[in-house]
Image 1: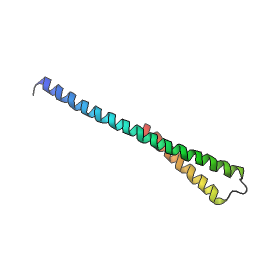
Image 2: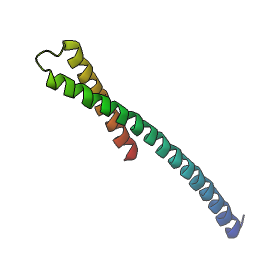
Image 3: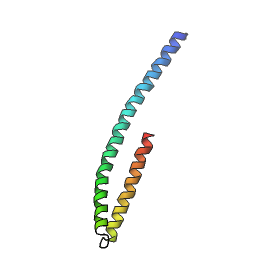
Length: 87
């Protein structure tokens, strides 16, 4: 194989990898965006729950506190997961 053929073959392989990477990046962006949108809905629920617990701190049930805490931990993990995917 001569030099021109080698570079043509290399160039074609790089183009293929580049195109595949572009598609994967696009899909990853959509995947992360969907994950973000879901977390934003959970964030709104969390803020509402925390506001309820804080407003009625004395009378808030242990179950309500645990629910708010669990949702907060899940949100924290979800946002950390997104941060890691974007690195």
